[in-house]
Length: 269
Image (cartoon, rainbow, N blue to C red; front, side):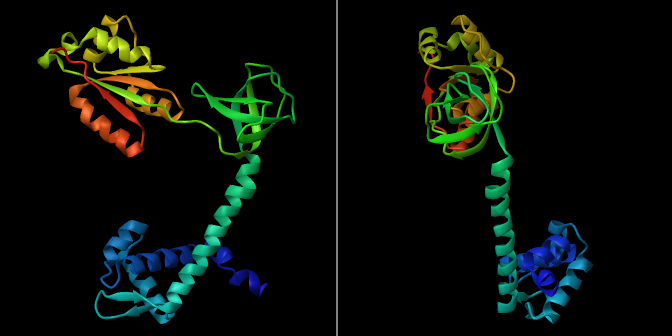
């Protein structure tokens, strides 16, 4: 039984005290030598007195060295203790991801043809939707229940990488009403842009009216920024018609998401 209780994974999962010791050691290592116990307490959700007591114990155990008031450093023994526990946690997380979650996870796809339980199928993205067929693909899985073509089908034991490319977002700026609104938009240019997009969204009434003047109703108006980003991640080329005061912030979101975009000038000269 002794070996079980010495197992880092066992101790860290069963003892809140050991978790707190690990967190405090990590915080000291990150901020040494000037350690602010108040900030550690706020971050961990405990009292400053509790942090002080933990640090005192860690000093007594030889895992932390005190260098004067408010100045601490993690010792070699402390570093080894952190690494042992971190490696145990990482190994456990890897086991969950690879050996457990992958086995029980079920993906939902559209059946591209009639499929039977146990069939090995290829899984792929088309027009933003996940499909499954008997044709081999870079991602393969197993059908969990019979499904007819066009029905939703569950795929288990998915392995490989689903082959798809992200879509391009075409960003079109429309001035607010104070600066002319939809009347300033060239209809021919806007029509050309949206004709190439599989998904069209509008931000602002001026943008919606500009689309209506082209005979197009937006696919999304409320929550359109998030919808466009999600659609592009699923491989759809999109167009978003957006009022000028929202334009810059949206471009920053696209940069942060790492998505490809093109800016189109629609303003009539």
